[in-house]
Structures are given as structure tokens and as C-alpha cells.
Length: 308
Image 1: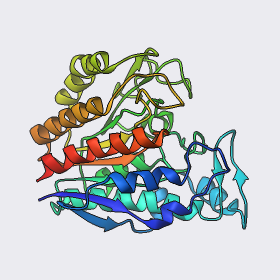
Image 2: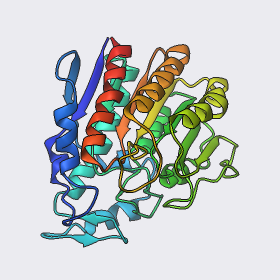
Image 3: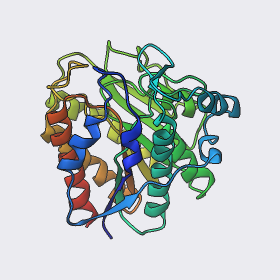
Image 4: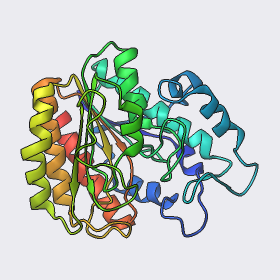
């Protein structure tokens, strides 16, 4: 088996206003850094309405579909915009996640990376925010549970911003353990350790500004990874945000590409120990183009190495 990368040019159709950090250039930078040989490149299908309804109510889905502009932008909150191509891009992101979960659980590939935008981990049940419309990784977890019959799925979010949307969507889901490391204080302001979920299945590890790789590694080795080991997941999903990099303009952690590679290796260790290596990663943040490209390459090259 191998590693697969899910991609679709329609994710380039989500166009944000000039100067917005979540811009088309992010995917262009990533594409140039991703491996061509030794991986399986696959198209993201367009998610159907029923896939989004795994996490979001019909009235919310209908509202989002109804505010797509014919031209220009529709502003949904302080920093979340829709252009004419945004809804299609978001549905490709959800469809890519669903296809990746299906392929990994079918044994077609060992692991995969969904190179999609817009991101998803800030989208709450009925609220778009933080550049996000739909909870992509949470929807993938629900697909693994309800479509494939799994009973234990782990979601790990190492984006520098707390995945408040994923937490909201999975707050009452006792079959999913959600673990997040994130800078605090920082947008969106959630992610305190005492936020544990309805069943104690949520693990939040705030990191102070300036935290480097050594402290991050200790936090995972001492807190997050032991909890995940005890949970014994059947599948691991990753919200892979690369804005904890020292060069990122939107936050103040001090990670390097080597730190993302280390963390990817540790998550692959966990996947190999408990679920046959089955891991799916989806793109979240990362806004310095050079740092983003280098960090995604480090992440995916570890997946490629471990998936072979």
C-alpha cells in the first residue's frame, strides 16, 4: 500500500479579497512542494448534501448555499468570505475527506493527505467562522463511524488556532477522541484544558506564545499521545495546520519543519500500533507561503515514508 494525495483544481476557485491570508496562493505553493513520485494522486469528488448533514443541520446548509454571490464576495463574519466558487470548493474539501476515509478503510492506501481549501476546523454547527464553512474533519469522523461502523476514531489538531468548530461538532460524540494543541491566548479564544466534552473525550493542550519544538514534543509525549494510546483508535484523522511555524504571520509559536515531521512520525507510530497505519490528514492553516510549502512537504514525505 501507499500514500494518496487528494487534489482538485476547483479548490482554487475559492477566491478571497486582496490581502486576505487564506488565499489561492496557498494551494499553489503546496502543489509545487508535494511529491509526484511514490504517491497516488486522486481527484476530490464533490460531496453530496447528505455528507454535510452528518454534522450540520439542513437550515445551515441551505443558508450557506443561498448566500453564494454571483460576483465579488459575500462576507459571513469578520474574516470569512464567499466568492462564486467557494461553495464548490468547500464541497470538494468535504468530498475529498470522505473519499480519503473510504480509501484508507478499504485498504486501498495506508494513509492520505487532503490538499483542500477552504479549511474547516473553525466551522461550528450553525456558524461559519475563521475562514471555515463546513467541519471537514468532523464530517470525516462521522463518516467513519456511521457509514463504516467504526467505534473509536481519534482526531488530532495541531493547527496553531484551537479547532473550536471540531470541538463543537464532536462535543457529545463519545466514539471520537478530539485532541488539540494550540497557542493561547489567540483566536478563537476557546481550548482551555477544562473543556473536556460531554464524555471527557476532548483533550486541550494550550501552549504559551513563543513555545518551541522541545516543549511541544514534551506536551505530546506527556499528555496527548498517552491519552490516545489508551483510547486505541481504529482510525486517526489529522487537522494539519502549519501556522505554528516560527515564520507564520498570524501567531507566535516557534516550530520548524522538523517539528512537524517529528509529530507526523509520532502519529504514524500510534496509527501503526492500533489501526494498521490508517491515517488521513487534511489541510487547515499556514499562511507564510514558504514555511507552509516546506512544512507540508515534511508532513507528506513522512506519510509517504511510513505508508510504503
